[in-house]
Length: 203
Image (cartoon, rainbow, N blue to C red; front, top):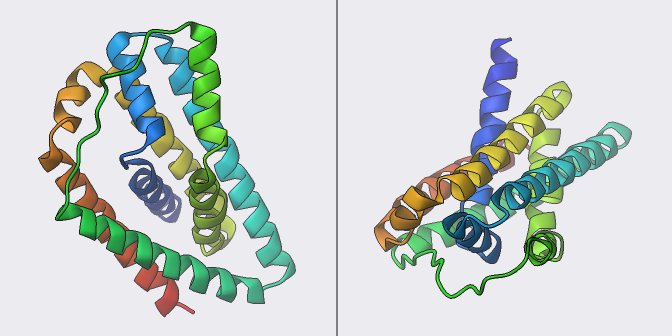
C-alpha cells in the first residue's frame, strides 16, 4: 500500500509539473473560467483527453518494455535527457518570468468553446510528447505499478484544470503576476531535473 501511494504521489507530482506551464490551453481554460462560459465542458475535455493520452502512453510504452526489456534502457536515457532539458528551460524561465493573460478573448458559443478546446488539446504536438512519451517512459520504469503512476498523473490533470477553470476568479489574479510563475517554474525545474538525473543514474 505504501509503495502504491508513493508511486501515485510521484505520478501526481510529475503530471502537475508538466501541466503547469504558460500555454494556449491553460490560457484558454482560464479565459473560459473568468467568463464562466462552458467551464464544465472545457475542464472535462482537457482532463479526459489527458487521461486518455496518459493511458496510451503507459500502456504503449509499458507493452514495448515487456516485449523488449532493453527498450527500458533506451527509454530511460531519452526520457531522462528530455527531463533535464525541460528542467533547464523551466529554470531559465525563473529568471525571465511571464504571466498568463486571460484578456482579449471574444465571446463565443458553447460549440465554439468545445471545438477550440479540442483543437488546442489534440493538435498540440507537445501534449503527445509530454503525456504519451515522457509520462509513459517514466511510468514504465515503475514496473507493475506503472498504472498507479499513470492514475496519479491523470488525477493531477483533473485537479489542475478544475482549479484553473472553476477557481479562475482567484487564480486569474494570482497567475497574472510574473512572480507566481517564477515560483511555479522553480518547482517544475527542481522536479524535472531531479527525475531526469534519477532516470539516467538508474540505467
